[in-house]
Amino acid sequence: MATSGSLNGVEALVFDVFGTVVDWRGSVSSALHDQYPDFQDDWVAFTNEWRQGYYQKTRNVAGGAAGSTNVDVVHRELLDEMLKNERWAHLAGKWDDDNRRELALMWHKLNGWPDTTEGLYALKKKAIIGTLSNGSARLLVDMAKHADLPWDIVFSGDILDSYKPNPKMYLGAAQRLSLTPDKVAMVAAHIYDLRAAASHGLKTVYVRRSGEDPAEIRDQVKPKAEGGEVDVVVDTFLELADVL
Image (cartoon, one colour):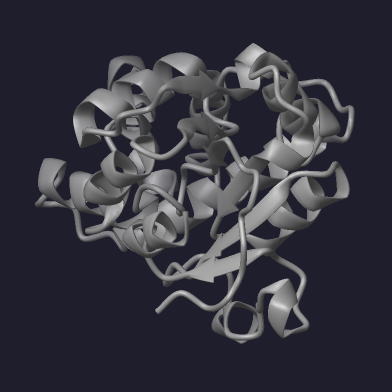
C-alpha cells in the first residue's frame, strides 16, 4: 500500500525504466534460457553480471569519463568483456559477431511488471509521463512498443548527453518540459537516483520493486511526512495514480 505523501503541484512524472518499469532480470534471463535451452548456464547470474557492468560504465560516464551514451554499444562492449572471463569463456566460441549483436538487442524487449501498463495508462490521464533513463532513445522506443508503455515523451542518455546521476539528466528533462524542477517528480526503485533528483529540486517517488535496492534499504525508505527523505512511497503505479 502507498504510504502517506504528497505530489502537490507536480505536472510531469519521469521514470527510471530498468527495474522500475520493466523486469530486466527476468526478461533477459528467460530470453537466454528460451533461446539456448541446451546450454547449462546460470542465466540469472549472467544477466546480473552484465547489468552490473552497465551500472559501472554509466556511472563512470556520468562522472565525466569517456564512453558512449548509446546503450547498445555499451551492452555489446560489456558482453565482449564478459566472454573473455573464465566463467563465461566457454560461450565465446559459440557466439559469433551476429549472435552477439542479437544478444545486445535483447535489452530492447523487456517486459513490464504486472502493474506497469495499467498503471502508466492511469497516470497518463493525470500528468505528463516520460522516461528519464540511461537507455538510448531507440531502445526505449522499441521497449515501449514491446511492453505497451504509453510514454508522452522519451528522455534518454543519448538525448541528454550523459547518464544519471549527472545533473544534466534531471535538469535537462525539466527544462525541455518547460517546467521548474519542483513540478517534475522522479519515479524510481533506486534510492540513489531519487537522492540525485531531489538534490536538483525534483519531487521523488520511491517504488518498492523486489530485486532492485536491497531489502534492508527498500524497507527503510519513508516519505517526508513520516520523517523520511522522499515525497511518496508506493508498491505499484496504480497506487501512485491514486496519490495523484
